[in-house]
Image (cartoon, rainbow, N blue to C red; front, side):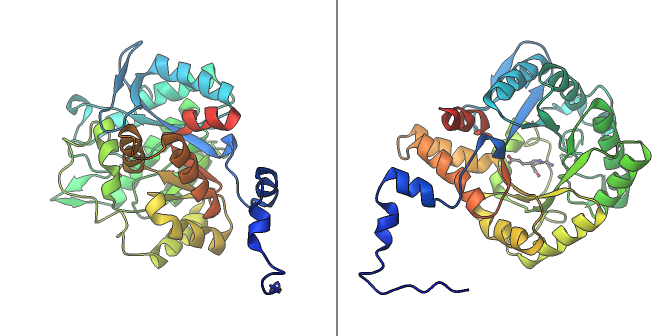
Length: 332
Ligand code: PBG
């Protein structure tokens, strides 16, 4: 039913903006700590953190420091953390075997978070890039990123993470058929309660630059990821991907990057009505932090406004490097 709008002056839309109380009453969307997933970078060693130059305020942390961060996150009311390993050239091989090693950095961090802060839902990243000699998310044969052999490896990686205690697996590789293969692997291994948050509409984006510095992939990567990640000009394809991933057993879907792709978030939510997440990626974070550090933008205000935009676009939550800072402000 279309509401009738009486002509001015009977309708004065400014009445609903008159005071903070009235604005709060009529506000349609809001951001809460429950909406935040905190991505963290884990590195080898003990009791150390190193700053990431292109992501001011973000550090790589050793496993013990990640556990400490989890305790802080839990105290702030943050529900989930997502782990990304920092690897050097020495951990990278052609066969990517470290990706499914039960003792790799990700799996150590999963166990450490689960024992330090049991209420935190632990999310992972499934893709071969941290362990691949050439920095790609899949195996490379004759200059091509091969699909099916990669999917077999991703299943092994997923099972190792589930065995370590992960709650939510995040396949970020964009291979075809990976959700079905991972889901059936989980079922056979008795991990029927492990969720899959699929990186469903993941674009081949220049906004991932700082992340690749953070995980040590910038030097390793040869070429680009355009044969598997989505073309930024496409929108309808995102809906086909969502339909496909849901039919293969994904529990939740993601759009990535976030802010430049809010139109996709809205279409996914309207089209499917399933739990929908956006990833406010490293480049979005870097951009806002750079402007804030120069005094060109009010850092806290744009942080909260940028996160609220995801809610307005239909997202149920957002992966954001701002999570602890945003939680502190939301709790204040
Ligand atoms: C790798 C992966 C990437 C990100 C998350 N998982 C980078 C890429 O695809 O090259 C990017 C996250 C960010 O930029 O914050 N599979």
